[in-house]
Length: 499
Image 1 (cartoon, rainbow, N blue to C red):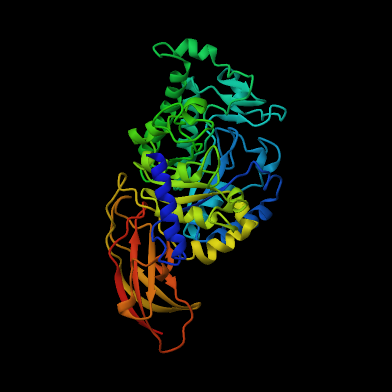
Image 2 (image 1 turned 90 degrees about the horizontal axis):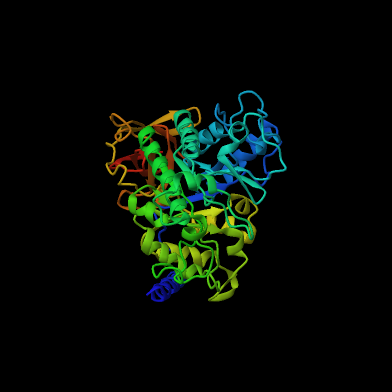
């Protein structure tokens, strides 16, 4: 059955490629990019230089119509934001616990700058990892120095012991703090749950298993339940604090191999369920996650983990929640397209995912590969595969009701030129209030189509939009809609403008 699904996926690919992928692009599609800090990109950079670098990078992503940035703010139980719970990250200033220049808060800056560009900002956190390298000293205020009994050393790194309730309480406190003080659109976890196995080394949780593992068939079931509890409690924490904030996880790309479980994929590789103790499908069944981004970093045709096998498997088993596909850009553009060895696989992979029912977007690992335009990936996204803007997918299980229509749409002059103004719709509470607006433009009324993303003239958080320069006497038709915090779109209000 899985091989049939993979074959069908390849058939859809052939149809899409034959059509040249020049049909109308999706109006709604998650287009994310991970921006990591542990690569040292910003370490020791003066605040002004880092702000300029980040702004330029966001401009680059905006040109590719990326609409969500997953920014790493907690790489090792530290912070790239002003925290009273954990120390400043060494990946900011070069020394853990050392504060940057007064007033410089990278997370606050990224929230503001992403929103100004019509992008979402998801705060990306590593849940259990507390130290990447045991030889690099921890700050005096680091939680591992305050409570060393909560931690396990493994593979020259340090981890919270997931079996301890104290570990979960601390992680939850960190998330509550971020939610209380920052207007983030999402809380995002990556694939680091129990650590990736290190050959010949056991994860030393004997004491916590002896204390809390009674009633479980074995240590593996207990470990999975520990991760389940964290995911469940994070979901409840986020819903209680800010129900509109999305909770997403990017698991490793294989749940289980079919050799371990008939439900698993036709792959041969490390497994979430057995090796990282992450039962991803349980999280979807229970509704504890709002979106998943499985890291399908392998190429089409990979011998052990074929992208063409894994994509339909995830669509079949995990599409109970919005499903976005994690793409390794570098690996993709270095692999030849099976149907045309002269091309790389970016076009083929995007065609497959867009043809696959249940898949609603993509996330690129990493933004830095796009900035380098490796394999002309950035140019291809901006010029073809993401040439039109896209709204976020809907999350009707959180809120499915659209806001009211905008009012009093009119043209007016400004010192910077003509602009379209409108009055926000009336609304009370986060479910009813407008958070953004979409402006559509067409040269003739009968061509105005709010279902066509090519007609989106702008997405803004302000009740106005500066109009592009046009020759005098030209008539244009515009439509304005309101979006709430979860992307539900109001009915349009149309207006004719003579320039």
